[in-house]
Length: 304
Ligand SMILES: Nc1nc2c(ncn2[C@@H]2O[C@H](COP(=O)(O)OP(=O)(O)O)[C@@H](O)[C@H]2O)c(=O)[nH]1
Ligand SMILES: [Mg+2]
Image (cartoon, rainbow, N blue to C red; front, side, top):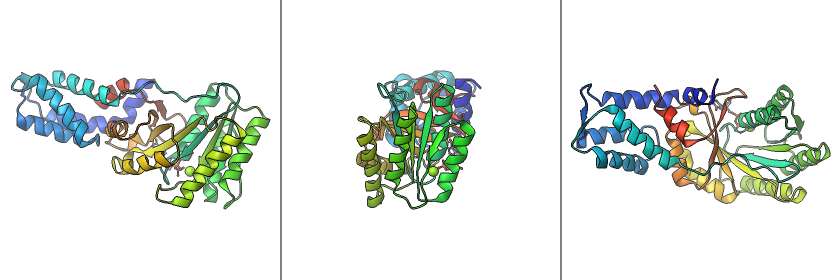
């Protein structure tokens, strides 16, 4: 499947909602852009979870250009899409690799947001690019977490370093880096247990892992990825904001876009959190990860 097809597939629920709601607003002969129309357009946009202010700004743009005129749907859609592309804009932000030696990526987020699956997806990419990958199973909270990552490692052909349930996650992270250095790995990805930003001790644990990584390799971790679940929509965002303030995150991966009509949440993320969205997850298998780029993303949101 091509890059655009993949995002389109991932955003089909969002696109279905938008296309149904917006199309329903239009008469075939064209639509008068009056207050009633603008209100309904606002409602349709808000449903995608982009947030009230961005939805209002988008509607204002439509109002400014078309108020009092009878217009075709396509003209309005173009204005909306252009506005959303601007609202989502960010510098191009691929994973930043170490200048030389092993690149260390730490992955964090709340329970069940898709951390481990996302690590599998990243690993699959890196291995396809010919890189040697070591995984550190520093989610020692549940035995099942280590098993899950071990299964992925075997399937994808990555090395894995594990600990026992209850072991200090920082020591597992430490061993993973040692292994990566020993075998000259290109990438070492550290999985962590899910936690809330209100769980002070667990947040400190994350800082400790962060510190341990930096002691072994200067500049490590090179990336601290915050994984966010798109199906929780805007709700999770203020939480995420606190998270990024405690552990210095470098980017976001937004998962489970395929499971929600709230694809507009990227706009809310970009507005609320000063971090780039690096990838989006669009399914449960290893190749269901797409680089985030505003232009194809918005085009896919409105694709038929
Ligand atoms: N549909 C869908 N499911 C996902 C995606 N990412 C993760 N999941 C599922 O979400 C559930 C929790 O994922 P997991 O990686 O174990 O979350 P963790 O607790 O953060 O490590 C699993 O059933 C995954 O298959 C995604 O992009 N799309
Ligand atoms: Mg996990």
